[in-house]
Amino acid sequence: MTTDLDTLVIALYVKIDDDLAGSARLPGRPPKLSHSELLCLAVMQAMLGFHNEARWLRYTRTHLRHLFPYLPGQSGYNKRLRAALPRIKRIIRVLARDTDFWHDTVWITDSTPVPCGMSRPTVKRSDLAGFAGYGYCASHSRFFWGLRLYLVCTPAGMPMLWALADPKLGEREVLAAMLEVDAEMIKDRAGLLLISDKGFASKTFERSLSEQGITLLRPSRKKEVLRAGEPMLKKVRQLIESVNDTLKGQLDLEQHGARTAEGVSVRVAQRVLALAAAIWHNFRTGQPVTRSLTAYDH
Image 1: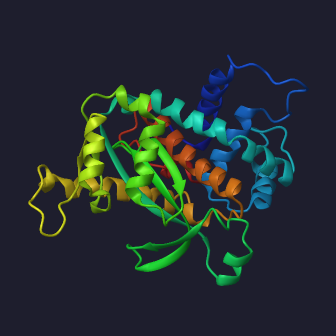
Image 2 (image 1 turned 30 degrees about the horizontal axis):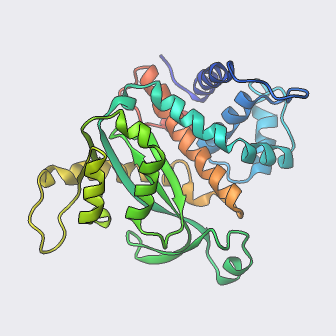
């Protein structure tokens, strides 16, 4: 089957529409741009690399009228997209459930910076004050102001859990909170293996994971005895790095352009949804590489 952005969006539209079929309709006139169309529009924006919503809507009016007969104005699109954050989170989970990756008992986790400002004046006047903070990016050997995206995914790259947090918060603290929120999901996976880096090292944390039925596999720290499974860890760890690289390189995670807490949250969710949608569609159409976005980014 030939895959392109149009076939992905049509398949995604049908999937979202089926998921919404059983939900109660809100009172009042139905919107001219349906909820399914709105999420498909958001996925296409992320895939095609449009950071500016005004430019994106001008592009869609010229090139995508065959898919979206009605398009809102910039303020209407922005308002509806922010209000759709809970639904975006739900659809990410729905897409994951519709693949074999949902049953994987090996998860990989890491965090990556999401910069929200590059200058001191921006930091001082930003509406993100109190939500974002300063952190250190070891891969670039520099400090940044913004948030950290914590991602738990399968080796194939399918997002299972994700969260945004202040960089000053400890990695173990954030991951523990994520696992606590989705405790029921963890219980359904006996013998879950969680692969992380050295930043999650802690006897107390590992004991807590063990009580939940999770085995933590991480590199050994200095002066620590070589841990079981470590020889194969380097290759597996590269998988989460490549997933982060997909989010940053092809989906422009660091170019989100948001200036409010709601804006950052929904624009990051928009990119996680685009990644999940591509993996889901590649899996359903039998593509050899499930995390390839090449067919959809033009």
